[in-house]
Amino acid sequence: ADMGSAWATALSNGERPASWSIYDRLRPQGIAGILVPSFAPGAETEDRNLVLWDWGPDLPHKVNVFDPSGRLPKDQLSWR
Image (cartoon, rainbow, N blue to C red; front, side, top):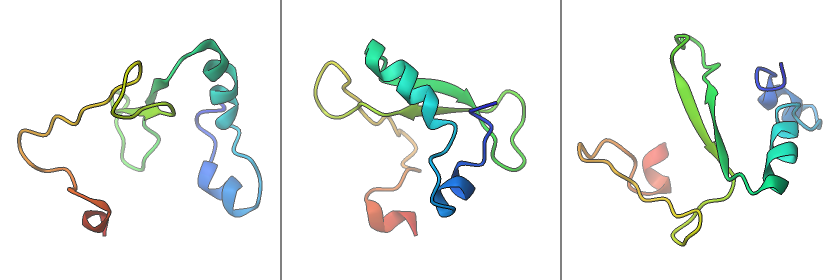
């Protein structure tokens, strides 16, 4: 129920999204992220999102981009 909450609406109302409570429970355990169902419009039941809150270029939470087709944005300007 927390994950399916309307986080953008909560933020725009000045409220803390209910889904952030998942971070509150997992972060102290050293967990760096979670694989969650996608709640995007049109998402199928098998669609997932990877949510990371501790990541970067160094261990222990090193993340490297693998984009062999070159479809991902190259920088912030590419997101427009």
